[in-house]
Length: 192
Image 1: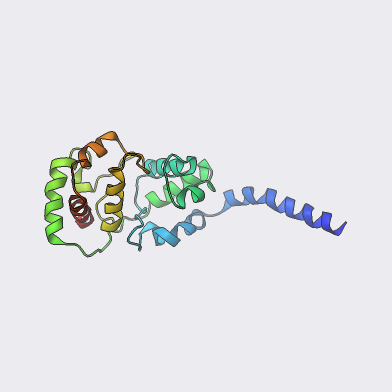
Image 2: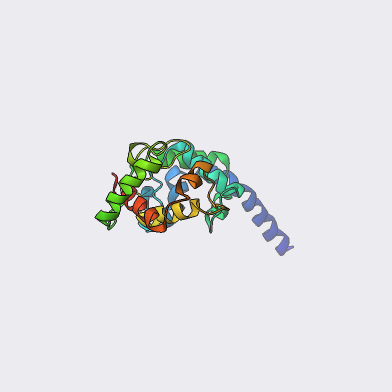
């Protein structure tokens, strides 16, 4: 009898949690993201992207791809599955309203100059405003950590890319060396 009351109480609590989760403040909803992406989405980790200030549509698209398994990840897929569409929209609004904070990374001036030339030759047609432009399908590159950018550029060259990219990315990056990718990463990181 005592066990059945405990089980009934736990079942009632479990049913009430989803309703309660919809009532929480957006700041509380976004708080778990700070562990990796920093306060207000301003990354403090070399391999973590800044997400504060990203366009709403881009944020939602990426999170849905993580949630649905269309974008490979180590942990984001598991985290994204915990949010419904309404919560993803609220997170997207929250982070879109945060100011973009450029990361202050150590940059190699020679790589920055080389990266600028590579950007103009291979990337400028899509990644406008020297990588500062962002929209529903394009993330902001300017001001991200160079280590994160380099890792993403390396993945774009893989045949089975873990992050969905337009075919043009693989075409444009296909002939570039790893040092070229580092140069691009340093160039974009230098943009504010």
